[in-house]
Structure formats: structure tokens, C-alpha cells
Length: 592
Image (cartoon, rainbow, N blue to C red; front, side, top):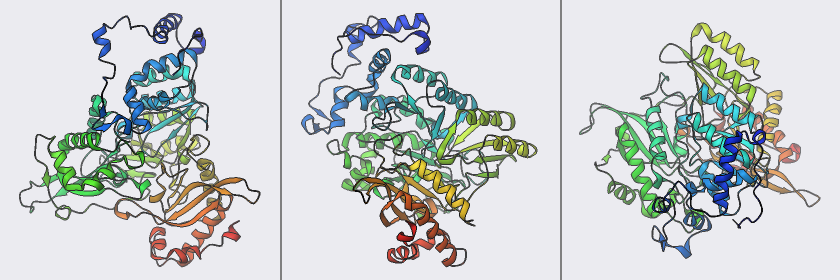
């Protein structure tokens, strides 16, 4: 950032939310930063600990060969940009140059040109929040954001439209809530996901929340696990009835049961380790032949991540994910390098020696379901993941009055209230419906998922959230489906909404109109799924205008209802037909 020569203007206490004393302290502190002075409370040796030591290479990659993002990290570690966050808060400036990238290490995203504002992405271990934390996030959205939040496809929460002067207060508020956003963006390990019903699911093999939380805190406490070659995802599947899409993660831990007749292995509950899920690149995670006890998952994941840190590609962002290292090395070499960092031997067992997993309930994250303790959980549909502050506060009241004071987020952009007694169900449902939300499982809109889209993301080519809401309303007014269909709308090839695993997946693109301008449009893929229905959707139509999509999908679903065989699912229906046969089901001219 260029050196500042103008006087620094502090916002008034009423504008900043700080007291006069706090503003005075911040003014003096930031003045020291801007003038390049030594921090008064650090000795010279102590201050040096927080600076980057000069090096000629990054994990063996010469500096001249590093890609742009790696050079930014080499110049200053992303976690060390908090001084810049404070300085920009004092002057009301957005981050510039390399700090745009470094801000993401603190979960802050400058989303220009889509919005001239900053988006906060939290870090919610296992998707579990207390009602106190849920209300606190609502307060952040009310006090400094747009009055609403977005639930994400990693069981997380995002708050948009933040201004730079409020970023320190937002981060401090998160810490006061017992939450963090550290490492939720850039080249870091994202929030750890877990089966959203774990701990109360009657069908699960093990409660994975303690392990998801342990992994979360291990990452937070180890600085060397920040600044990977690219982002990294980890997920725990409890063996329960609701999917967490663990097979789309770089590491997916799946709970399995080993019986008494397996030689050399004590019977019990273990985890299979799957590697290299990255559906934006059309690949699911693959079982690597390793069987782990629950306690072994944390050190094994840490060892593998450190192998990735040392050997991942830092020259080409397109080949910097774990998948490409494993593609080059193969699984045996990858596991051998991981083993070198462990104090115990890896245990190998063929997948077929484990008992097969139970199938998933496709939309078991919605509706009323029994728990193992005799109570119930209620899954609530939040259309495309967006919730107002008033809805959040009302749902927190429901969870306190009728549940156990907890909210569970899912990777399907909705939430669950657990622990509702039978006699309280009707009162809880009445209170939920009073918010304008609904628990009922709608086979058309219950699986409607959309990323942020072009209204809030510079990469998106289409208004995914807006189009998704319109599509859901259109279909709900025209037809009734007797089986659930998931429709995923993603704005670009990054596939934050994981369009390749939807029954119907739409990826945003720009489409040329008759007058030579471009309009929102989508490529359409069909037949995706995960877990026991695992499949990468096939592209059927390219560059369809957004205003043609509602009619196209209506025609497609009507054709499915008319031509399916017996109780055939939509995914099975589309998978047995050729691309040409699928295209023949719809008249694009009629759709227009």
C-alpha cells in the first residue's frame, strides 16, 4: 500500500461504536502503524518474531516462479495483516493490492466490483451454534450489515455489506461470541463440516461433533497450517441419515462398522479416509484404503495437510489443489509421505471388509424427525439460504423455548432445531411458520440451492439467488412432484453451489443477445448426486438465457413425470437417457 501523507481522520465514537477512550487509543495506535514506528509494547527482538524472514524459496519453489498469490503471502503472512485492518478502519479505506487477498485470512472479503463493501465469512465448527451465538451473528448483520445473513453450502454463515471502519468491531464481536472467522477464506483449511444431525441421529454410528470441533481447534492453534497452496476442505460423516457431502471434500472421513470376523482388526466403529473430492473439477473423493480410529483422524489429517503444504504446486493456481499432487504422486506415495510424519502406523483394510453404509434420506434435513432420545428435530427451509435478522431472532427463541438452545446448519443452506419434545411440536411449528419460514419438505423447493451470484460476487456471471427464487415460485405454481429433486444454481466454474451433484445443475454464463449485448444465462447439467447416489452430472444444454430457464425446467420435469419407469428417481431417469434423448425432451424455442 502506498505511504499515506495526509492526516488521519478518526470516525466519531457514535459512528464507530467505540467509546471516546477507545477511539483515542486506536488513533494513537494506528498513527504509529502509519508512520512506521516500532510498536511501543514490543521490544525489538519480540517485534522481529512477527516479521517474515527473508528466504530464497517457498518450500523449494524459487521466488521468481511463485504465482501472484504466493508472492503476496511471501511478502507478508495473511494472518499478520490485522494492523492493516485497524489502519483501514481508522481511515475508512478498503484494502488495496495484496491486502485484498490477506484480508481473507481473517474471513473478510472485499467483493468489489459486485458490491463496494466487505463480506464476513464465519467459521462454524461442524455447523453447530448456540442460540447465544446465533443471536450474536444476527446482531452483527443488524448493526453493521444489511439486516440479513446467508447460509452457505459449507454449513456456515456470511454477512455482507460491511464497511471497513466496522471490521475490527465485527471481528471482536465474533471473538466475544466464542466464534472466529480466521482462515475461512484464501489458501486455508475452511470450516470443518459434520453430519448436521450427529449426536441425536438414531441411524448414526458415532457422534462426530467432538472430532469436528477438535480438528477446528487444532487448525486454529497451529500457524503453520495457514497459507496452503490452495484452499482445503475436511468433513466428517457420522453414518447418519442426512448427507454432509463428505465425498466432495479434500479429506472425507466416513464412519464405518467393522465386524468381528475381520482378521487383525478389533470390531468396532472406525473411519474410512477418502481423498481429493473437488466437484468443481468433476471429481469425488476416493477411498484410499486406510482405516482409522476416531482419535487418529486429527493427526493423520494434520500430517497429510503438511505434506500438501510442502509439496503442493505454488506456481500454477489451476493445479494447486490436493487432487493434482495426488494425481502426480499416486495414493501409495502420498500415504507414505504422510506416514513419515506420524508416530503410529497407518492401518490398511480394503473397503469391502467394512459393513456397507446405510443410504441417505435425500431431503432428511427438512421436516420433523425422531431423535435417539425420544425427542425430535425440525429441519427448516430457508430459501436459497437467506434469512432476515428478525427471522433469526425468532428461531433462536424457538430453539430456546422448545429445543435445547442449539441451531445446526447444513450444507444444504438450511438449518435444524434439535431437541423438541413431542408435546411441544405443534407450538414450535406455529412459531416457525409465524417467521415466514416453513418446515415442510417441498420436493421442488426443498432442494433449491444457490450461491451468492452476481449481486454479491465478482466471479458470478448470473444472478443465481434471484433466478433460483423465481424458478422455485414458477415450478411450485405449475406442478407437484412426488419425489424430491435438487436444483443447484452456481454463478461460475468455482461451483460454490456444487452444480455437478444436483439432479439439475445450472452454471452461470454470459449469453449473447440479438442486439449484441450479453445477458445472464446458464449451462445445464443433469443427473448428479453424492454419497450412495454419487454421480457427476452431464452437460446437456449450453448457454441458455436465464429468461428461458423456468420453462425449460418445467418441460423437463413434466417429461420425467410422463416417461419415468415406475418409481424411478429423476437422477436415474436422466442417467439412462443419452444426451440427445434428453435434449429431445425440451423445445428451447418453446421455452423462449
